[in-house]
Length: 339
Ligand code: ARG
Ligand code: ZN
Ligand code: CA
Image 1: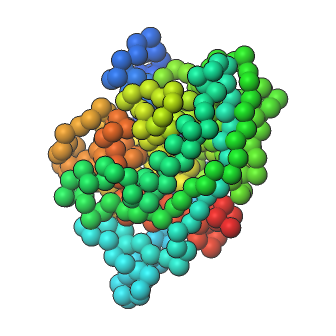
Image 2: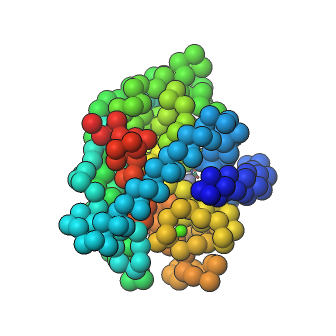
Image 3: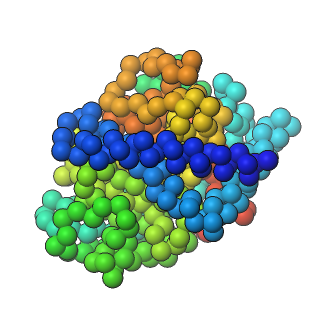
């Protein structure tokens, strides 16, 4: 049953995103806020679709989804039984609570640069690690802007990040695209380092208005990790408004930890596999006013997994927290990261 649901989901993603690909190519010339946002459409999902054509990957994704759903069911059961670990979240969201406590992810940053601005400072790198820690621990200063409808759902994901190393590599290449060339020394990039134990982040100019992209769990080890353009990495140094608060990495690490876009990359009935994020049929851009209603409910536009400006996204939900943490539980796809 679950299998059928997931393959339907994947097929729909393919359709939803091929529409967006057209948009991407059309607006390449212009670069104002809105059109940049248009350009940003559906990137992670597009890579996901390409990978879904590979049966091996498709099988991995299915196994990870099964494990995730059973983790969530366990947490819900615990909550019903009133076990101490099983704290129910408000608003009918997915209860979360496991025995893992705060989990830490060691991070390796690979800076590949063609000029001084792209060779970002250690301070800029550290600022990104700090933002990740704030956003994933709900200690971001803007979390108080979450409207009361969603306030009980804003979650401390209990994930932290420590910088374990920085690699720097000069290159004459000025834009890298999204075909993972930056992840391979044979192509002038930097090879992935021990992805079972480290989150690898490549910082290089992607080009084409793309802020960043990520690989979901279950993909090839050689390309595992996140890529961010230097001007959207961290919140100090050579950063560019309105994506200058380090939220691109928050969003991409969300994908790396198996979160889908908040609107499920499709129409109203398309799911992000998270029960406490209201359904929507579109990405939101800029800085939407609350409530922004789609599919007969207010969108959680302030969620990191929407497409709003950095200053207008400030929460993960309890259901998203559960989905991410399933990866660290016994048998989870990223269990080895936190050891
Ligand atoms: N993958 C998306 C893109 O490249 C990231 C969007 C992040 N949003 C943000 N406000 N930083 O467009
Ligand atoms: Zn995304
Ligand atoms: Ca949802």
